[in-house]
Figure 1 (cartoon, rainbow, N blue to C red):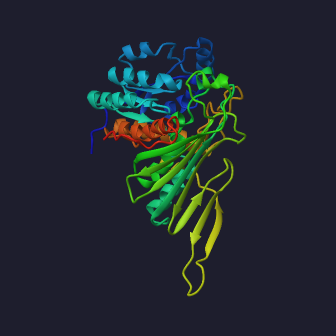
Figure 2: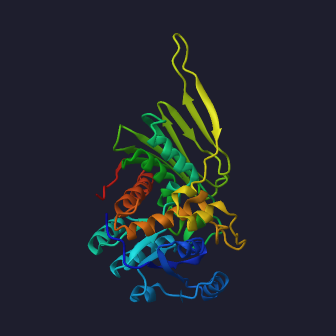
Figure 3: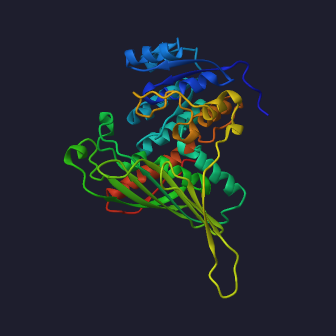
Length: 380
């Protein structure tokens, strides 16, 4: 057993547009001494700080990195800032949590993995999809052997990003695919090794210009490195009439689970017993996953057992919403903090995050080359 740190951790949350959903959870964590907030928008920073009682405020991440008053930084910033900011945090000698995706190029992924190892600091990609109520239920069922051998996996993430900040416009769908990819690879305990991906649809020219991506939709077939498994992933970002959904489906020899609509129950299929001369019966059940406050300290369990305050001006509706992304936020905070205290790797460490993120990067490369096979590197 590793020796706990001699004092509580000091954390800075950078980016309040979505990071505001996490700062109060860090503040409540029993292993955290204090929390600073950082945002380049001074007005937003002060409004949030006054409303929720955060006195330590910064408009520049560099000031935090130069300070010896912080042990860890949680980055909740625009996608294309993630790689360099993560490198800056790790190279400053601080632990780093970062919202998805880890980066948008294979080279950036390699640099982060190397920096994490060189600096011997924890990196955790804060992937909400593997800590939702729905995934925690599936994970427990898999541990109990209820699915039997998994035969196929399917994931999807549908979201319309029109009128979001400018950097979203025309983003390659698979560059932001970890919400759909990670539940599949996590439940299979596997890595995607190669991919064929096809783009679909026509996107308006104004959205093509920023990244040179012509596709509003991309669909990929991945080969995994375990049990001859394959997985299908579809990702949409623009001009597709579908309500928001982060979906995963698990197809096993004994049971299968599907989740297709954001606020609907999961559907569970179970294979019945054989009877001579008859097809095997398959039962269908709709199940609502339980919340899991038992996995959290009481101070954090509060955020999924009590009605949280909602900010109507926040596009994620989640300033104090521990139930954001189906209850995942407190679990992510707890795992990141405890991994530092216990001096161990977090559940989504740099290698795991790189493997999950690389799958989408390589998928887009395949789509831009007419579905050509692309090998996905390993970061072990």
